[in-house]
Image 1 (cartoon, chains in turn purple, brown):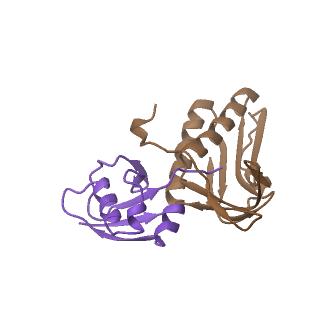
Image 2: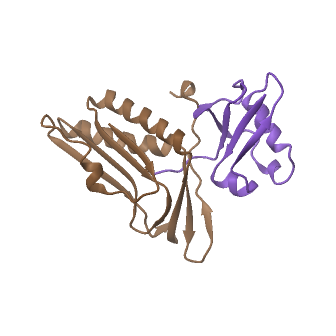
Image 3: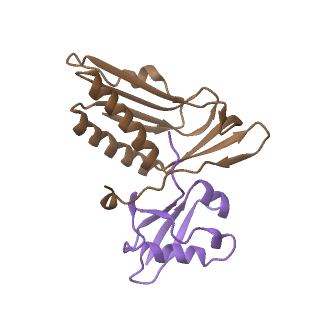
Length: 81
Length: 146
């Protein structure tokens, strides 16, 4: 399946990437997507192994199953206000 | 009810004008502004990054929940993004309802929830030319929240 990933704030600075596509095997979860990004080597491997994630604009657990076309965002701890 | 996440300067009077009703006896406008120091370090400016579409969703959810808790739908929340100078408004919350107690309570609750779960990040730029993303809150999926 093909999903889209988004990176923000410090994660975007770390990798120099805002977004992209990711090919994942059937049965992949949000955690699979995170692992696939970290497996790209430095500097991607410096992303946390258990970041906060959102799937299709909602906070999700890392065991959340993904579907083709989903959008997964890796979110640093939030600091608005 | 009105929410927005915008790179444009916040005009307090416009946020204020979103609330108010002949039935309301209390109107509150809170403005969060950029201060010139944090943790003892002089701050020159702030940069806010946001996951805008999700931030709008979270703001709508927070406002809807606040409306139920406070018994008023006269609520407006606007969060600024981009680069802000000292004194600029980063967050505006306006609430009106019949009485002051629920108005203050709703506004305070909204501000805390914004900080706790709206996907916005701020980077402080210091007068020595350096900058860093501020540590923040770690939100949990809705089903795991108390």
